[in-house]
Image (tube, rainbow, N blue to C red):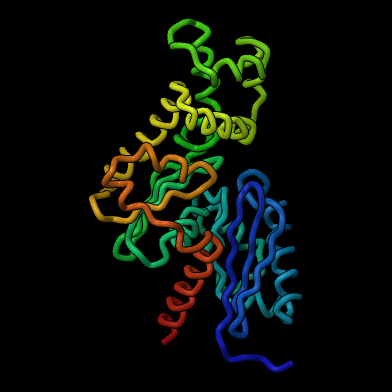
Length: 295
């Protein structure tokens, strides 16, 4: 088999739902998707899925897994909460050179490319990120118990809480509240169900909120307005000013656009790429660091 002298790269973008792994080899990018890879939730499962991804990429690229493991690797993974768990994972994997970080940096680089700007990511979880002059800064992403404001699970949880307030008579009538009361039986049914709901379960209620907000339901609109208010406040505290691009990502992120102030709406841009593209770009930057150290 003829081997190319072009550099190889390997990258991963992993979360609680899926893990996508890519390699750049012989001038071509190969991508595969495997199962969930949240390192904090299930370390062993994450390792297994990353191995599966490496093996599947090796088949596509016509290389052995051992060859691909020699490439500089950048892994952006959910559940990387500190350097200790990153080092533990690096030890469990076969990569010769590997940089492991949480998944926010790859998402930021994928959305903005090398451009300065902000990303407000709101999927099941949420975070706000800034990229300026090659420096990245992050806020949020602390999970469903203590954070993830404006995320889909936050929207669903808030809708249930506001519905309970409506039954107390402290808020006006709402089609959203009536729909949720019918869905769960009554206020007591909401309380019982919420005790066992996962972040994904709460997030599954977010489409109902966004749908009814489009119909002008006051309660639904107030929830999205509060979520947008959080994003606006954090971006301004992180240094956003007029003219800096803003990219809304994630399943619910773009739906906050109408609730942003006019100057921020005018700065909205579409994502330049996906998180796996960002991870590959960060793998390239890592390769350049290695080459510089050895030059």
